[in-house]
Amino acid sequence: PRTIFSGIQPTGVPHLGNYLGALRQWVTLQDGAPRNTSLVYSLVDLHAITVRQDPKQLRQWKKESLAMLLAIGLDPNKSIIFHQSDVPAHAELMWILSCQASTGYLGRMTQWKDKTANEKDSSEKLKLGLFSYPVLQAADILVHRATHVPVGHDQAQHLEFAREVANGFNHTFGRDVLIPPETMISPARRVMSLRDPMAKMSKSHPDPNSRILLADSEETIRRKIKAAVTDSVDGITYDPEDRPGVSNLIDILYHCDAHPAYPSQDELAKDLAGLSMRALKDRVAETVQTTIKHIRASYAHFLNENDDLDKVAAQGAEKAAKSAATTMKAVKSAVGLI
Ligand code: AQP
Image (cartoon, rainbow, N blue to C red; front, side, top):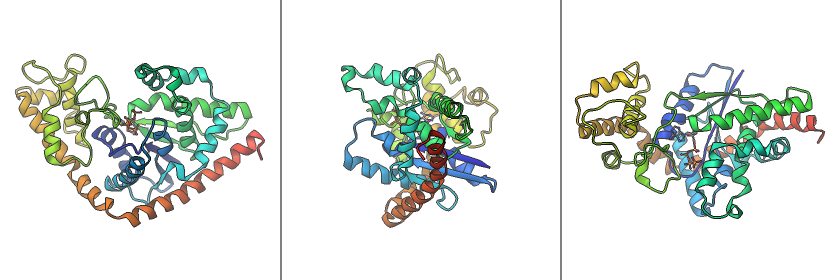
């Protein structure tokens, strides 16, 4: 049997990078799943609080993110959809795994190093939760005995850590309690920021024009893509190294098509070679609009269905708690807690 697990932080309406890099794959996996597959998708609110959040804002974001998971096509009858903090086993397993995890390994995580490099103030301000973020992520995955984890490329290192933790635990306690999961990276590995094409598109970047949200209006999509940073070289070519802005737009165009009509971005770029930058941007905006317009409409509908959202969350939490309980029993027994 296969178990798919993945998560997204409820820190704002998901963007095009989240969609092409992860969420679209969640839906494809759900819709094409053979009978013996379980699908578990979490809004990882405990991860969201590793940086300071405004409580009112966080509550609103949790609701919006849940509405968005339904809008993209996740079906609560086929997938378990739940808020991470509703299932205490995640945090409980995290503690047990923390007692196994090496601080040296955690300190080498790129995300930690990036975030600490940006933190201009003293390390007094850096929180333990941010450091141990990958341990919680490992617990999320392992507690549901996930065999496959669909994520964007930025999570590959954390997944490697999760495998290491699972193998380490099994080795220490001499039995195969935890399952080392396989990483599934989507073809759209890394959608870049529209304002800084060397950085990934992210929810937390201070400039809202750096990302396209799945709820953006057609006009907003056009405006943001028009303002995307490119270059002044004549003609269109695909060259991520030297022309990151243009190449990101080509990547977006290429990956918006779930079954790309071209064998590679290079081939697509050859067909676009004669276009002006403006014409390329118009074409990208049009394609993005076509890709997300149904999601936007569906999102507006689900956002107003408060009772339905509460019901989905409650049912999801109940199923997720059941899925986690089996693992917790085996883990506690292995460690000697029961
Ligand atoms: N730019 C991206 N391209 C491809 N995949 C991406 N993912 C995120 N950004 C890109 C994938 O989306 C899933 C959810 O990730 P997240 O909740 O961490 O989203 P985020 O936008 O990365 O959020 P933040 O707030 O900006 O977080 P930080 O600052 O931690 O990056 C994951 O599968 C991720 O790979």
